[in-house]
Image 1 (cartoon, helix red, strand yellow):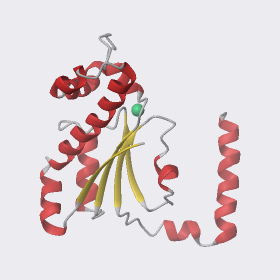
Image 2 (cartoon, rainbow, N blue to C red; image 1 turned 180 degrees about the vertical axis):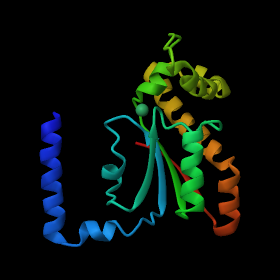
Image 3 (cartoon, rainbow, N blue to C red; image 1 turned 30 degrees about the horizontal axis):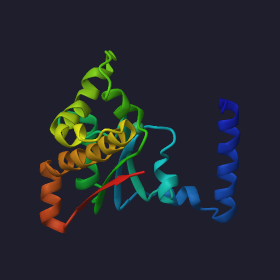
Amino acid sequence: MNIAQIFENNRNWIASKLALNNDYFSDLSKGQSPEVLYIGCSDSRVTAEELMGAQPGEVFVHRNIANMVPNTDLNTMSVINFSINHLKVSHIVVCGHYYCGGVKAAMQSADLGILNPWLRNIRDVYRLHKDELHGITNEEEKYKRLVELNVQEQCINVIKTADVQRAYRHHGLQVHGWVF
Ligand code: CO
């Protein structure tokens, strides 16, 4: 996919939206009130809006390598804070995916430079669940299970935040763990 093609696609997309509703973009400019915060992997195959059938304005999206929610990550924590306190979302989704390159990398002992501290968080998930994981002899099944356990642990990280706990008590905010 080249850059010229992207701009061509964009012009076609704008035209298709305006053909259905001439006020489409002026309506969008009035503001957003999404019901859902989606936290997923940056992987190009896991297209957040497309896999949910979501339209512009419906889902607030945060993506990073391996859909992580580190407690000290200012980016992720700011997204959670903003989506709860300003957008008033009712649901937070953490969506992992099988065959995640980030999870695969964390299962290896290689030195990956700047990625090391990021992958450390996944290696901690492995350590927390090592008894279960060591019991899985099939490497592919172990890899898939770590993807699932990582989603579970990142959901716990979401639930640990004061913003989420306050929103749960106030209006029953729900947290969902998914694997694509
Ligand atoms: Co991934």
